[in-house]
Image 1: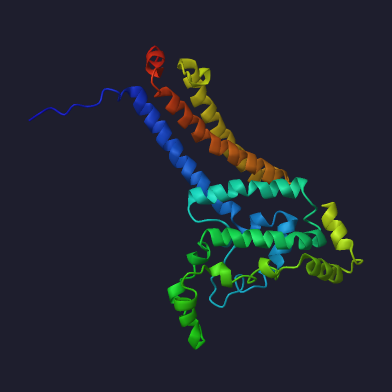
Image 2: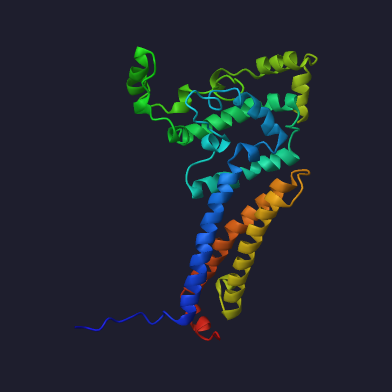
Length: 209
Length: 82
């Protein structure tokens, strides 16, 4: 029987390094998982007042008050699944913190509403790029039977090459038209009317910020 | 090319900086969630800085490792005291 030759590079120091590195690696992963869990919660997201404005319509939506009792929190829809993807999303999300501090006054409901369409378009694009992966955490296309007879057929045939967000948007937050039909001027007039602003003030506010 | 040269001192510095980043990152995130007051986005800023430190920790360690296995690094590192 030939003798098993052990690699010579395994020394006491290598063993120490492996042990410490292994423990630190496990700690790193556990900490990141907890961090992502914490920062994906509604409680964390709404620590910024601007997000509280976005959360208000969400709290009236079926994603917050579903008949099934399955509630989707901010992170369930807006943060990718998996610790690395979620960490990456939070890392990239740092730009929103930068904008919140140095950008327009998003805490102001008027400024917030004026900038909302761009945020909505960016969010929809984010979903589309990921093939609505976060929707599919809970929803299975093949299992959507619906109450109407054509629901099943639509999801099996018409929506075969489509992703959820292409048809299902404006479900949670304030209604924003599709980018293809969005008219900035019309939106600004609507906001002026809603908040009792002078005609043209919305354009001015948008220009200032 | 000088940056790619690694010796005993630089290897130890890499490991040490990585450990400091790792510990500081964890402490900053914990501080952001529990200690820092909710004033002018301080909590979020501290937490984000903590996340950056935490993410840089393994990157520095990996970079140090990669430098240590580059051709030519063996001669320098073999002389290191244990």
